Image (cartoon, rainbow, N blue to C red):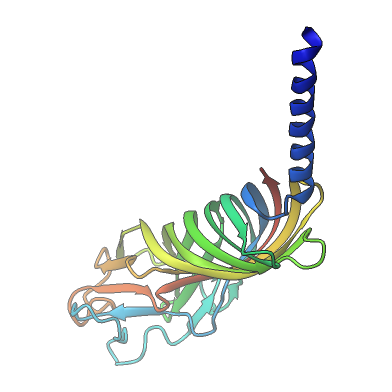
Length: 280
């Protein structure tokens, strides 16, 4: 009597096991959700044209020259990328590479039976990338603007090819980001009074890049990725007041004060990352 019911049950169980095994064997890589962590080097895109620009007449346009009483350019020693080598010479220690970290959640899907893979991801990152730009006046004195991406949240799409046995993936990626940018200002000028505005704010930007992944097991993979990021950054302004400086001070001659900011209103940087991926 028992065998009458046991035999069909065993048959159904065997069929379920065999179906599950077949589904596992037929399951494709890069086809479903995953979580990923990354670590890498972040470096700013230095430019020889980076400088500090000035609004000496208060019209909101930063295209003025800070002039001395004689009409000479008070910033004739020039500008450079990095922090000052000294307060009295127009030379800089260049910007450095820094470590960055990120965690992402994503979903990939094969299109049809071919090797084409598409996906979407959301990423939270702490890039740690810093950029400094310095200017030098004839006083002599140095003036340094600094900015750092503190946190960033990005959403990206990616399109790739998974050739051969499907264990590898080569892809291009791009999307939009929202980052918190911290600003700083330092100077060796002890006479004027300096008031920074918008020292910390959130800005929109975009990312683009590409990478490769390889699956070590059904669920664990390693990868390398390059990303180029660009964020709008034009809100940080330093207002220069009189302080203990005389009325003949170059910052005061035209309107009693001067506003200054970076000439480059984009914060651009590169990232090269190693990734560890866990797929479900």
